Image 1 (cartoon, rainbow, N blue to C red):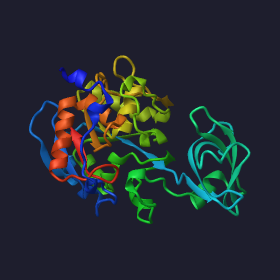
Image 2 (image 1 turned 90 degrees about the vertical axis):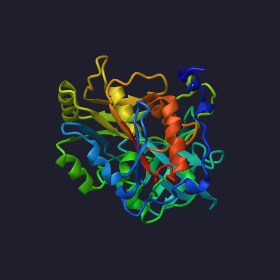
Image 3 (image 1 turned 180 degrees about the vertical axis):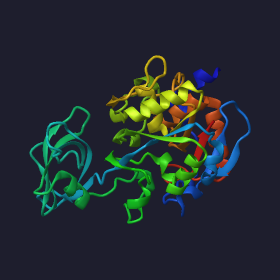
Length: 351
């Protein structure tokens, strides 16, 4: 069976992971995470620490970061009956002044249009409408600005597999040090390993740092349920590429420098924004791009990423970039070598 056909089913992306390998808390220091160096041409793996990353970056290379910031999007409250209820804000709806949002609610069977959730004395969430995918349109009823109400009363929406509530440390550690544009419901986790001094060392190597935005949606938590990946529908996510980033990438490409994507979110943004010649065009939009084998990458030369859940679209993206066999070999190496997995886990760089 060919490599391409082996990656054509969702079950091809299963792997066994001992539960204790799930990183439920971050490493003591961001850049102390382990870093598995994976050559795309089936060379030997190398085991480093993330702080060693600048040594792999050549002068003139461009490191592209996703500066999206995780919202305190989880609103916990009560129905008028006193029963507990939860609203997960996904993204604001245009033209509504930031008060109407697409959201998920719990319990879904009880929170129908016309119902409400009392979060605090100064914040009630009204259920306005239902959506085709089982979500809701909600309105934030508050004397505060929507931003202030969310910041005051919201909680970080940690991934379910952490099996714990958000704690004080997560307010810092579940954000990248360069997060600046609020809008995600999950962190772009490859970037969690960077520190400001580490970024300065990257610049000191003569490399460049560019930024894009992709606001991570709830689809990142949802499994692929169809055995045929082509039947899976990606949830739309909002992206933005500034003019300065597009110009820097064009200049780097003209002189043969490498473009590094820090995370699958950056990879999807750059490949979405690329034209037929592989030139990244500045702009904003929404993407449903599903990168899976075979996919012709036009922009990204190097990918930094964490270790993802089995059967996930993120693992399929890695397989499209590194090759199906090499991806599974890398995961087997990481499991066998005691790496920590998922959002707060270790990282790999695919060269």
